Length: 531
Image 1: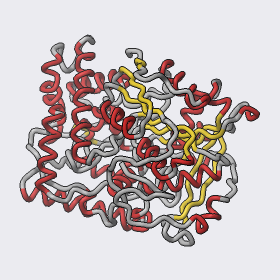
Image 2: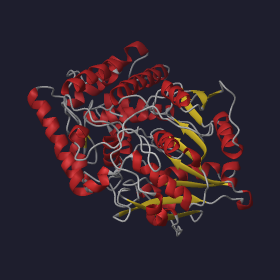
Image 3: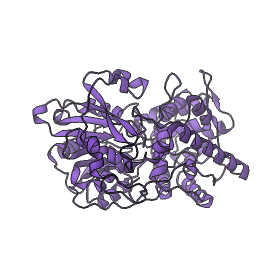
Image 4: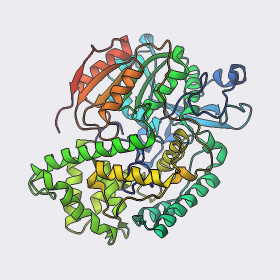
């Protein structure tokens, strides 16, 4: 996605932060059938025999923790971890390899075990080991925990997988967050684009172009099939959230004969181009902002006032001054306009973060920025010691090879106009900007593009779509279900993704499908309980 406080300069991470819930936040195929835009031929099955036949050596997970906050969780002996070996370049399987980090919680009733439930939380760039640890905790006493090994993997370049995609050092990331790039004059546009070119050069130098060229969904789905075989599963059972739905439907297109069950929650529209997807997401976040504003108006002392129709203007009065005057913090840092917007957008992913956002805006009205900065730090992956996860670097790298880049400044300008109109709460007041994003100058070509999946022989799968999802709007799920002849579960609510997060109606349907392959009836609906 290309929606952010900085217009088209940096993508929005499709990731639900793990603050108050158990789980955080579009390419094609790999393996046997390479999707549209692919530039590397798949390796012959014989060349991958050793990868498919590898034995996984499981051990303690402590060293696999993707963040400091995860260390205690990953030290739990109920989890075990390993590395899966895969070729970095599938056209050269005898060349360099990557190590894919994998976490597992074993089925508590092995005699009744069905197989592995493989989980990816999206991003792209989010840690699947971290997500699986959260899901495993929630399902360990039920049918899923009893009958499945709950498995998560960090896609190539992500989390604890090696080598890692990394572009910015922590000081560079801190400095980048302070740059408020709203100048749409020719000189301002040149500065933004030079900034993006410098970022790209750092990515190429620190990550290596061989990893960048093979970091996309096309290659991750190949890794997933090797993982399926190494886990001992004849067919894949998979739960993908958000951008993880792209992995799911791309896997289905490449390996339909290897699919047992797919739940795709918070879907990307497979045939939607990058710009239309970004505009749709902008509209989704405006809808989420409007819902937040209506809720806030019912709270005492709402910083946006008690008239929701004026909330966008009142929000701008609070945040726009930070463009010129960032808010000093007690730790010596400054909260920029970028951080104020990033923190606000982060909170709009789920109503569980609406009250922190309300309190953050109350603070901002008082000249303080502690809460909004905390929300922005969660989004940015900044840890307490000042280091960062490389989630945003991976997000950019994967996104740049998963979509055709937008290189025409006129197209960028028109897209920014449309996004501002769709989400006026995000408009910085400086007018649309034709500056091209990092993908326009990326050092390697894209390896796939959005397209309608062509799948033959796929068992019926399930798509979940939330009516008020800000990041992956409801209609995208409708379209994906139609494209794959899948069963759609509609969920009334205002959050991004919902499966196995405590909504009983949804969780019961998902559990029944995974365990018994029983789909809900046509037109099935659930509702998320109000916060």
